[in-house]
Image 1 (cartoon, protein in one colour):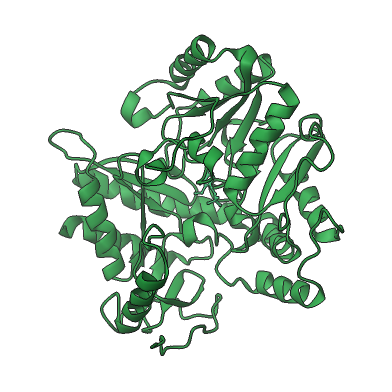
Image 2: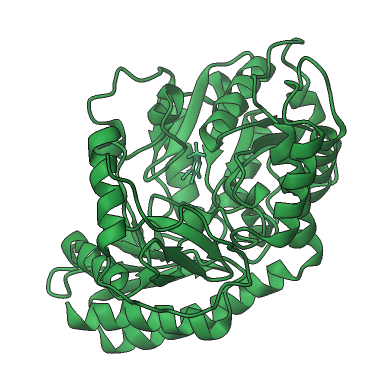
Length: 451
Ligand code: PMP
């Protein structure tokens, strides 16, 4: 069997030359070789969006086995917010790995887990007493948040929203809205999940109050407040298309939940940790959730997730009712402590806001000249343009696909999103510099003009 002849790894991190550099077509021969092996070894259900074989990444670039350096506007889906192979994260990981790599926290405790819990209890919205439990993936955090809310309330129903994405496990697929590719053929899904309309200003034109009244009326008529354990919502929807609800929508839902003793769970898996220009997206409208789920950006690329919430809610499950072999792995916790230090003290919230100014400015300028850009939206470094057919206003997913393919072929990693597949989303690492960010955006917009 042949193998990729380029080095499998190279030194990454911010020391990599911060440049877009193409020395072959994308994918180049070495990337193609790996992707051929992938096709033979990995099921097709595990897709690959950008056809490259990565050997290093850092700052704002991803380097492939052919020596191409691509501008990263995706951060591995909002994960490497502190930067890929961030030196502080790498040092913390190495030191922890040398000390011990695993005990299973529910067998023998260690300080890193407790320190991450303390940090999240301090940093998530609200100054009430909190507890945090750690897990490995975002889906696992969401599943556990639902378990805890059911245990706390003694009720079963979970209310979720149109366009929601909460993961790919059986319960979280039930919570996720989109059939293709996520749910198709994988049912039956978990019961007692009810979907109500989201606030989606570009599509519904409603104010936040109107959209909340519509959702609440549906919950009260079809589910019943007295039977509802939890209301679960992404404060800004991620996979659903970076949908920012109209002002007032989230506070109205949170107030309704409080009034009816329904646990309000903010799924901040994608929006958390400075991504939206605040430590958590709930803060933009002063919403204090009962429970917050986090993952992705939390640990600079190591797998870690968390459920943080009101102490009385979080303490309701019995001893042994919450856990898992790897949850709060010590190496991931060490990485998280380094990443959280950067979010708190490294100016990353301000950096996300500066990225918002640059990206929204460029996208709005482009929108003024191109009616195919139906909407431009987002907060911080979580920004998007929604592409439509100007004649009909209908979503244009084919155009969207061509734009991100053009971008990849020209050395820029950009991702799509949206129920209708017609959203180009921008999730750069917060470590990207202005010049690279502007260049990367320029390539995407050039792609839109060209295709
Ligand atoms: N919730 C949200 C809001 C997400 O964006 C995601 C991942 N895209 C998940 C949950 C699931 O996270 P994971 O893929 O780590 O299971």
